[in-house]
Amino acid sequence: MKTRPIFPLLLSMSLPMVISMLVNSLYNIIDSFFVAKISEDAMTSLSLVFPVQNFISATAIGFGIGINAVIAIYLGAGRKEMADIAATQGLALSALHGIVLMIICILIMPAFLSMFTSNKNVVDLGVQYCNIVFTFSPALMLAIAFEKIFQSVGRMKISMFSMLCGCIANIILDPLLIFGVGFFPEMGIKGAALATGIGQVLTLVIYIIAYLRCELPVKLSAKHKRPDGMIIAKIYSIGIPATLNLALPSLLISALNGILAAYSQSYVLVLGIYYKLQTFLYLPANGVIQGMRPVISFNYGAGEKERVKKIYRIVLYMILAAGTIICSLFPAKLIGLFTENADTIAIGKTALRLICIGFVISAVSVTSSGALEGLGMGIPSLMISLCRFIAIILPLAFFLCKLTGPTGVWNAFWITEVVTAFISVFIYRFSVSRQKDLK
Image (cartoon, rainbow, N blue to C red; front, side, top):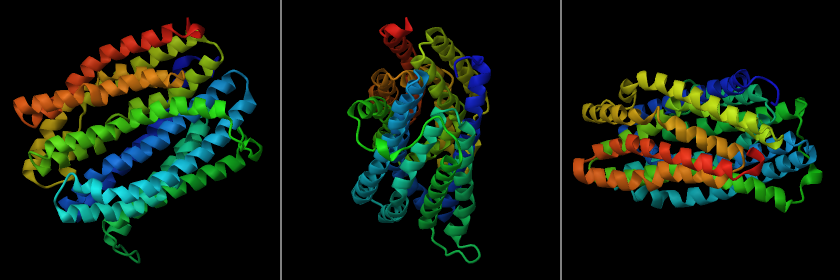
């Protein structure tokens, strides 16, 4: 972490995550592809459920980022017992979060879905999906907590293998459970939810087996079960802003659904498809960021200030390069996988063409936000995300829709990325300049 050349180190940490996220993104696309074969109502219900489903994942990943950063910082500073406490208590709190979110989300979904559609069939399909998929929230929370623990000590290949197994299981089970192939029952949209849940449980089981069989620099221990207020506060101080960073797109999607629903259900469907594709399009950047966090945290804890600065610069260049390639290969034709409606396909192609303009420039804000999380500066990172997902894009989308119609929403994406890039550079430099250890 502290002595290996930075670029090869980042590649070794990032590539396993890029591969596993690629499979996960392909799963999201394939899952939606099979659900779309049920009916367009089923695909629309999945689009409306997505913000809440994304919020649960965001909570798991965001809190996991807090666990990851605190463990890596303590290990970098040579304080192993504190790292053990962070891992143990972080895992316990993740399980608690999963139980609470499972109960709340299942209860609110009928009313939530009814806010965006008057189509009773869409609401019924969405509720059927949620009642099953949200039951597995505790398993998802624990699996992601383990993922971040393994990543914090550089065991990226274990994370890759566990995620791959869960995603591949989802891909295989989707058509079997949705359409009733062989001895499997035909469950429709319920089958898609059950396949997702089984994949999450499988991932968790593999993590537990790997933990029991591997020697890790950090250990879970019952002797650390007594809550440590200082460590828990540190985890939450990073985890809450990181959760909000990841959850803000859910709020954004819900708000944009409200704007677009006034024009046509087709626009709501296209927005849902875009956010399914987004994980695929941003996976190189997200993989590099995941690989960067433990490296930058460890070096920050070890007091390697110059190395921290080099890590930030190299990651920015890596994401800029990836964004340029993705922008040139943007898969607009993928819209046709999710609907056969010619009008919807035409709307989707226009949307994707406009949104992709902001991909390359978003590297600046994505890198700055991820680096700040790794350095334990959750609030400045959250400020960047608020600009990207709320403060700029929502008023801009509303205003542009009044001027140009629904295409105003698509233009709001790239304009927001340009403005946020300048803001994020200022926030990052200002935040780092205030940290004495990094001067």
